[in-house]
Image (cartoon, rainbow, N blue to C red; front, side, top):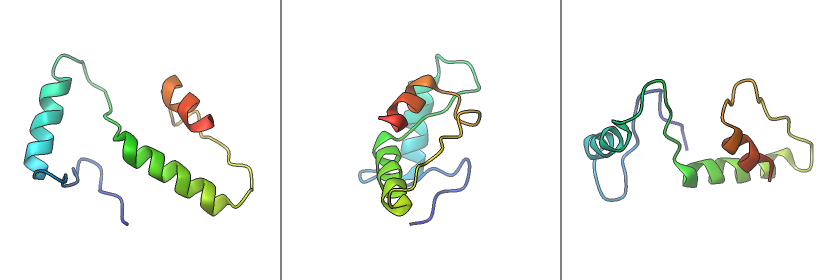
Length: 77
């Protein structure tokens, strides 16, 4: 499956991209930019796929690119 382009929102099971954009904007309106919204089901699926493809080869986390301690902890577990 191809990843969406930056700024491109995927369709959700129950709605359109416009619906998703509206929900994300409403959920994050109290926060100052820059910020990121992580779809954790996709995060978990991508991490599992990365482990599968690594086939036992150690994976190095690009912690300089990933600036969230919580996400780094999550991916290392």
